[in-house]
Length: 69
Image (cartoon, rainbow, N blue to C red; front, side, top):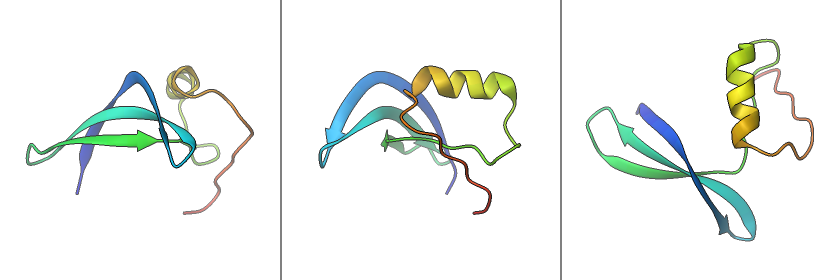
């Protein structure tokens, strides 16, 4: 399934963890909400403009580097 997501300004707590609420829609038009705690880009694979937008959406809590999926 592929989804397109857009962040909102809303922060919600799920099981004691703060998450940003994102609105989403699937390829077939189903509307979803996505609760995101954090996002990490693969090391060396993020455009600087994308990194700035991610930084604007998520407060940096600790460094996280993903090298493999």
